[in-house]
Length: 390
Image (cartoon, rainbow, N blue to C red; front, side, top):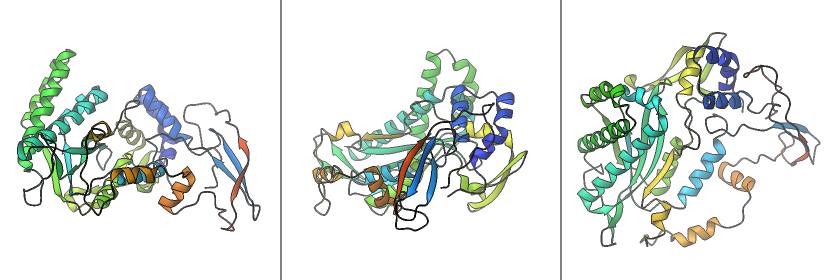
């Protein structure tokens, strides 16, 4: 359902000024362009008619970009469904690794390298703790987020860690004896800090860029790093539903945008210094888009990664000992292979049938013709096109 104000409206209004004042990269410009024509006549679509009451509907194609706030719902539902079939029936812990703000300049300098090093440091830290504290190879499902509530750059990784693993001799072992937490948090802080900064300095030294950012790195050695380790979550299915909230989020959703004027954008943001109360934040329109471009990831960059016993290549070489009340992995895989169309799957997961007539509620919308792409007006971010009826 369309909200009153959308990210696409802000792109249309302030996109040209952003190009003039900030000069975004070609990738950032391409993403903003795709968002601006989301579900308009520009990318084409199709005409449908109800086979019962004759209602006619014009549906326009979505942009499909992973940074678009309206193109993620189906992907998120499918991801949750897929992972539920693979999750181990053990306790899981939610751990969040955050890097301090002085490193943001390095992040913006080379996002791909920075985020790859961040993923590696997170996994290597958790893997080392699994071996040193419990003597097991554990696993992680890790999801990258890059934003804070006010759209500032705030790289952090959400991890779901199972309280189990394999010993060196191949035995299954449940772990976790630190009260409500999997590992002592202060030790995670220091280990993660050392690993990440060491790998970052090596990468910069290799590219002969360490001298440019050495002062920022030295500052972070004196900064308190934050690793947030929460108590164990309830069940395997609950874990996936919880993590699913984080997987396909984008920096700003349309529901958070309260108002857009000729110069300003006002949106809701949680104030974590005041009990996470939602408060309105107003930014200049160009500044709003500039902050949004911080969170456009490099092309084909993988922001959800699986490590250890959750990595598919590792799983192929391990015989996991599932508890009796949980079906074995072969049963789950066979169930997943049962024939089911994408629309049937979407209806099963969301309870919404996109082919149902919105008027009579009994008929089925049948496509009668395709609508071709139309020539865009002049300018990278043109004014609004005719909109879809849904």
